Image (cartoon, rainbow, N blue to C red):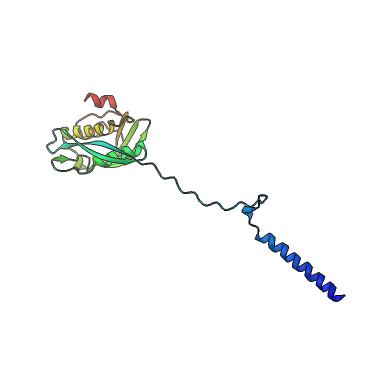
Length: 184
């Protein structure tokens, strides 16, 4: 009888181990009644859509008598990025017989909101010019930015402040509006 009890006990242990083992092998993903959520793989970040646009950057001739057109291809994601890219190009060299009046001007910040570009700059002494140069600095800025339909006005600040004149010769409007620039 002892062997019969031992065999019965052994059978119960083996059967219990088999049942427990089968339950462990079940994966939660395959069990629809499971409350354990499968681990989700991280979804990749969406790739930004980059646009390209041929844009005219306005510079000046080396004698400060007129503006000179320089066409570049700009890559951008948003309208604000397009404005920033155009301003960056306004500061780059563009070849011989062309002056880049914006090169020594430090652009501290650029914001675009509701058609208004707010541009905060720092104007070092080497960027200060006579009246014709001051006129061309403003003209190249306006022509470059007002070619974009979404830009209706430009608020030009120097070190965060509205100033009456950029270099002491021409009165600044706050903000400079598209209509004003087209009348010049």
